[in-house]
Length: 279
Image (cartoon, rainbow, N blue to C red; front, side, top):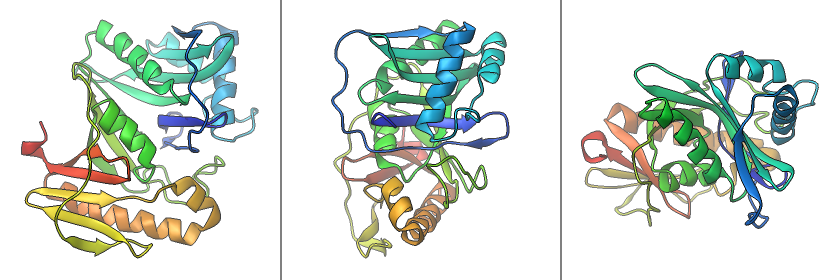
């Protein structure tokens, strides 16, 4: 996921309660050899991870989203900082902490294309070894590629919609937008998800681009998101914000009606399923 063609699977800014940026399209070929994942405890390694997050979220390295000393404290408190390397090069990193009721929370995860799954599996192995059953994190629901990764590849479920959860963000990726986030819950024993081919039923609402936004058939809803909200935010911020508000309204209504986000198609359609049918 990001800068060197990266994609985030989740980010929450732990120290001040801000969060989750998602980034650019993934275009480079994924590494296939020499990939390793390890937990990081040493000062130099944690400093490298802090620099990595700065590069991903386009902040000065003097003001990283997660300073090295914060990472060190989180690791010392029982959390886990993982780093994925392609050969000698740092190609991704993640941070997770313990939560209540045998749960864990992923504060941040960002890796180059093709390596995000390795990173999440390392987090899962760490959590399962501690007796955890679930892991949660947040992400921008308008970033379709991250929704596909979270819902379709990992098999996590969108369980909570958070309106402007972190307030204004100025990290170079989210400038000018409202920081709505979707919380996902990942069953660490689940085998993974599957790619949903899409949507049925009549169009109920129109999207800001004039195309369909919502379809419904029976007790299922389908909601479309833009192809690339990061590019849209940079080039047409007014249209990006219109998408934010339109999708927000759909999700808030759906979640109030007992739906959860259970899938994402390759062409940008969420599947929302009533809770009793989502298991």
